[in-house]
Amino acid sequence: MGAGAALLSSALWALSSVLLASQAGRMPPLLMSAIRSLTASIFLVAMLFVSDGFAQFGAMTLLTAVSMMGSGIMGQAVGDTLYINGLGILGVNRSFPITNSVYPFTTFLLAVLLLGEDVTWTLPIGGVLIVAGIIWIVLEQHQADADNPVRVDVVRGVMFAVAAAASWAIATIWLRGQQGDLDAIGAASLRIPAASAAVWATIALTHGRFQQAPWREPPTRLGIAMIAAAGLVGTGIGSVLFIYAVENIGAARTAFVTTSAPLFALPMGFLFLHEQLTPRILLGTLVTIAGLWLVLL
Image (cartoon, rainbow, N blue to C red; front, side, top):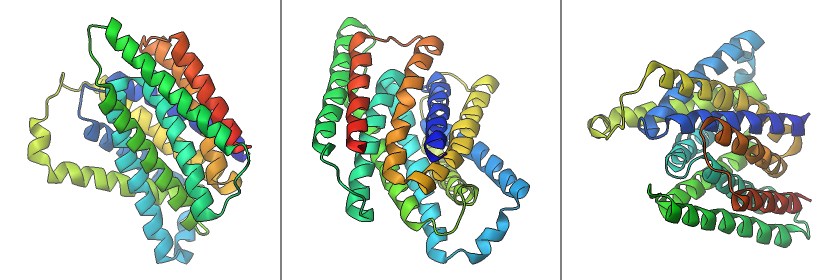
């Protein structure tokens, strides 16, 4: 059940990424994060009412409460905003494989160092394949730039993607170590609203600069609805499934199972965003996923 939840979570995250990528560049990434996190927060609070989940908070420790909110801010407010920036620069086909390579590998290392999870002999081999796959994808981006009049800031996009992955890894380990007796819905109901509050507070504190930020075009109702839908499926439902998976199969294994997300995201980007799929991108993704599975063994 845990692996199935992680797999479904990755599919929903892939769909969410395609929805976000369709609007990336049309409005500031911070606003996109604010809309999707608010939508997810409303959904999760409703889930608490339906499941009568408020009772579990009575036995919750202060450390658990602070940790859940902190991990939410790190993962959703910081990590997702960085990821949306990367999406706007690199697109789904390149940002997704990079983040879904760096994130589980970093999570695994942190899980070994901080949570005492076992190290397998396949770790070095898998690590080499992961690095090779990422390099292959980035080199293909350089080739695409050479053939495309629209230049892409590869280095900046990769930096955003890697920083997002590192934020997610820290948030996952924090979640795994301090969740206590909260169930998946209870933990998500603390993490996501805390992240939403942090994003909206940032917008309020930087209101002047936010208003002056360059917008490619005014946001439309359809665009806002698509971002809200991304928040519902990816941040709302996906986060509950993800936390359930972490509870049942552990932080490292969950992170590696969710690397199947590129298998969903790449065809979605091709079909709905008309992004180019090249043999190198496909091969780099396959090599990366193979490396991640070797690390998991």
